[in-house]
Image (tube, rainbow, N blue to C red; front, side, top):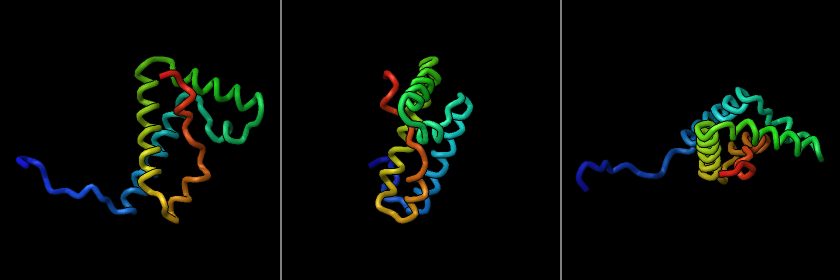
Length: 106
């Protein structure tokens, strides 16, 4: 294989956990900048929760660039969460709200 390094696809768990923490921070910052409070959505119930979810979708689908960026950040977080399973340190993310990937029209 010309020009292809012999790099293993297997990565150290500590690196993956650090990447996951960074991805969560980036997604949280992106969401907060747009007035999205994932913890409030997680804690809300009934119609209040549905209203917050609708508001989140509206904030994310303002334009294609924002929508694509949100989906990219959410996808990265999801992939890194899967890469960290099963791991005791993974539980640090289990209490954090998940992104609302499936709620926006793609």
